[in-house]
View 1 (spheres, rainbow, N blue to C red):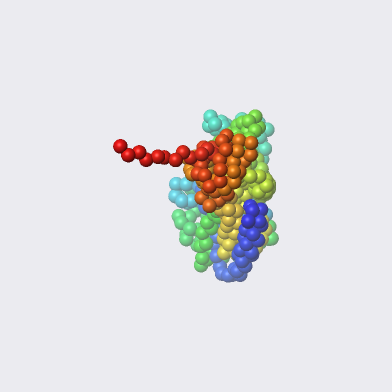
View 2: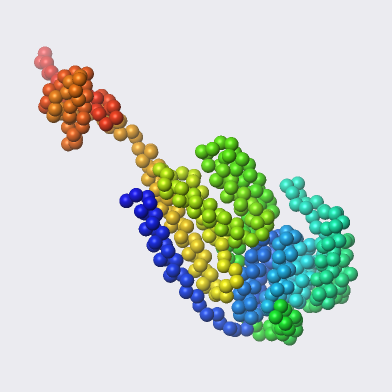
Length: 443
């Protein structure tokens, strides 16, 4: 059975297997409050994490709490998060937590944009001047145009939610910082809470305006649902770390150049995949799904090319990796589906590329094993065979070697039933010479 037939059989089997995963479950409509941890650098991962949590929270029509503890992050991702909050159908509560946490820079922008702002004891917000990130570190941006634009943006968010506009202005212009008590006194936050349970008590009964209109929070007896990031978001978290994203971008670029200048090595394929991952991590590909589809398309093209070429190498391996990563990063956006269904979907996204990967890995193993075998000629040299058809210098004949008929030639005339010694091989023809009979002498 050739490689193409095996491929088609696996494709059909994995498709049938995937169909078994697509059975959603109904969501229990109990009183809940969804808790989402916004810790570390704000990045593309943060946007996708909030999208997942918001989809679930809107499905059960319950508020969501953002636990903010961040030094800041990507400005484009921050704007995308704020847009998601403003378009949310349910209340989004920003809570700088735990005790001693910070919501600097991007964290302050997000806090100002939430429907309810809260802080835990000894937490700090502020320092909203933008910075530029490079391999040498971060440098403050003093461009007046950008500073004025960000100042107006944050002031408008403060005005939108009835918060202190002067503080918003100073956070950008002068990098003002406030602790929890100062923020409450200045009218920047509405609630001071020492824990999640305390927060639930204090926000219970508050009425806020969401994208659908007024919403009264009922959180006193709500069940806390901690939203854990999916495998997709964990991958995004890794590649969205600024240093990792820059590293992927630079290594991908140099590998791509190396591959284009040295065709046949496979560097252009690896470089292209790393380059796409770096662009996704830095947020240059705004829609992660576009980057995921691009990776899947590249992977599929590489696997199809591998099917019609002999052997197995970097092309097939890169195709498997690209398809697997792309499948994990691809996600249906606005589907109201349960977490159990999502887990099944992710499992299917992993199984299908791994099945193909297993097939190609097995093929690679067989090829490598075959290449490591010693040359077949080595087993012929010095072996004995028997002539079944006369051999002359002008005409080849046949010999029997281990029960098999082989065509053979020689520089001498050899009669049938004579024993010969194999001394070489010319393509499919053995080279033989008469075997000299050993005589016994008695002294």
